Image 1 (cartoon, rainbow, N blue to C red):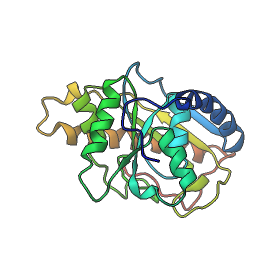
Image 2: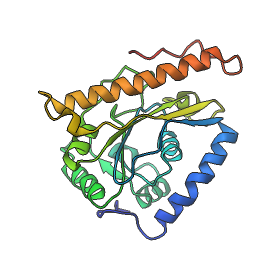
Image 3: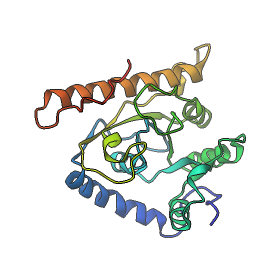
Image 4: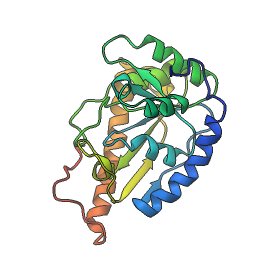
Length: 234
């Protein structure tokens, strides 16, 4: 099944998204002790940019933002399971090539934003073992600036313990997600490198939120921070 080449969702998928979000949030609170912090997303189209520890991060971001999102997904995720491919494409994933210039994916993402939708991006590009090991890419900032929409950083903590890199099953752990204040491209128009400045601001806000959550966990006797977890670089 090919990905949807037009803005929006196919018949039934948008309804499925809207039904799945509260169900996933309820299951998340029961299974992984899910907590959401931060403001609601701004109205209208947005680029949601989150850090990336786990295969379950897209689900957690959807639970956090309470909005159907079309995620940019690297094309290497596809081709292993026809069922997974069909479901992921039906839910609006936009395949993004690692080996070729992703012009088609970027055009589709811009069309989605122009139509009033929301696009999800993981600036690190891959799941990481620990925050700070991979420099964020500029794609999220480019989309937000080109479309003239807010760039909303979302911090996800704890999913590395749920189904992180190298994991093959979902384990119980605490998961906290924080919606940060939006980054507006107009605020960076006078910078010599607006995309670099926006990307650095995304990194700073996500890093600060992650550091704050880790401090809270360390101070809570119920959920001590695992000794193996690396502290975020500021």
